[in-house]
Length: 399
Image 1 (cartoon, rainbow, N blue to C red):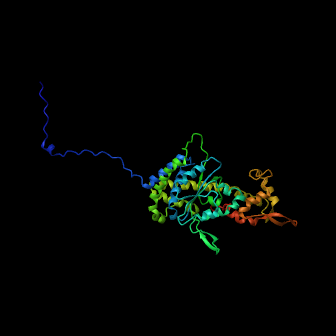
Image 2: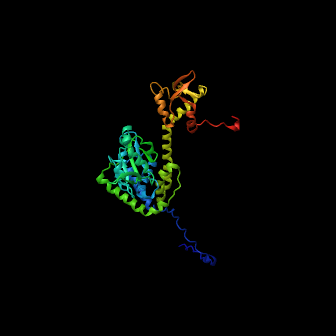
Image 3: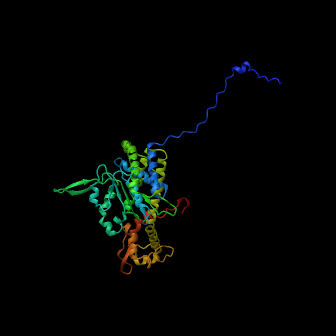
């Protein structure tokens, strides 16, 4: 048999050397668990996604934050409107309003309600006003005139301390009724400009083939939505004083900032990804609405510029006949005016396009002692300076 290989005995130096400790395992970074607010908003967002195909992720974020903001209405300076509009029927407007109704603070459905009944329903702890088929309120000029009081209430209620005054009681005393309340309005086509300007606008579209949503059944589905509503209440109500003191940094200014501030504030209260998502949605959606406004007004601004060119082509007279101005405009094949109607741009069309600038034709005396309707160059000076100013010369090039 072979002798066993002897195991070397450790030297004194080796015996004194410390045994190297085991390397601790590398743990993955631990992310903070989502806050109560993050969970509540994320759960609500998924319910909207379940029942409605919204036009974008930004719109989904905006609707979620708007609903949450209704539960802190008394903390806000402004009460943003939610304008849910679409170009035709079956775009999901009413379905979206169904889910909104079951998750907002104290919903008050105002179908067929008079303006007097609505403002008498608004208290110091206001309800959330919900108006479906809002296009029937403001669609035609005759109907819009009839509902002018409702539009006035919706406009005034966007900001605090804008009460409506009414004479009431046997002594005909003047009473103040509050108007401040958040409101969601759904309808076909754009709502009046004054309401759209105070709204977070959701532009709905019909679902494409393959885009599926769950059916909404009131008895079956509202308990879950009410549970989500209760989670929002439990999270937000203790933060009321904090919300009142919030002045969140806003990515927009003026009316847009007033409208979006409650949504941004709710996102900041939730934390996590919500502050960045809210500001991204605010920037994208307000930019889109600004572009829509520009598209709607661009034709009249184009007209102002073309009228200035017409005056220049005629030698910059102090006044120009309406008939001659229309001749010049309708002879420009590169402009939209020859095809504006079958007869091109007409005196009536010209009057309508210039109405917003308070410019109108009048009887004037022209060379040869001829009297005719026309415009003076001075009438356009202010509008030209405001809406289509001529570029200033570049003095650095001697131009």
